[in-house]
Image (cartoon, rainbow, N blue to C red; front, side, top):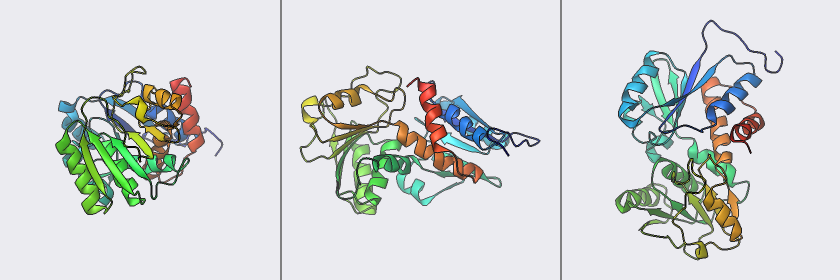
Length: 287
């Protein structure tokens, strides 16, 4: 079987991304490139589903025999009761970004944190490091839990809804046994001086390269690592401003590619060409 030669079957297998909004998400482009490279005649769809229609959409995918797919914001938490079974990681994180069909059951996992961790390790080993995580939603939960399991020394959760932030901090402290606390996010957040890695796990900046992150710039210092989960645009205003302050930066594309490769293996049982995924994502985003 040669490169880019499709292996035909009577019916195309379908995988899909559900989110709201999803315009500008490169996942379909990069997954279909990877599918083509190994000759699988599958389709990956991008479906914009409003929150009030999520349950109907999941029932539709079940009825139409979709093979699997991804959930992105704002569905990662609200989809939980709509699936038949969760992995232990997804249950602990309280969020799902990847699902697949096993017989007539829909199973959910969370690969966001694993994808982020692989990307972060290109710059630093998370073990023994002190982290600040902006946000307490699905992506933040996945990342914080994986950081704790990887041996982080301390995790600070920064969130506007202090109650939700406290829940995540308690989860990390009590179940992952890593010191964690929450601070309420009011106005510009000033990063503690001992923080080694700052992670934006919110949607601020998604689709808007000028969106300002309410973080005090004078608390971003040389040597700090600043990471952002936003993929479009990948070079967010936060990352640009952090670079100007002498920080190392990490965009969301690495996390996207890594979690995409993990999902690809789950759906197909095959390894993908991660370089082809990255190439396709950069083409899509024009970078």
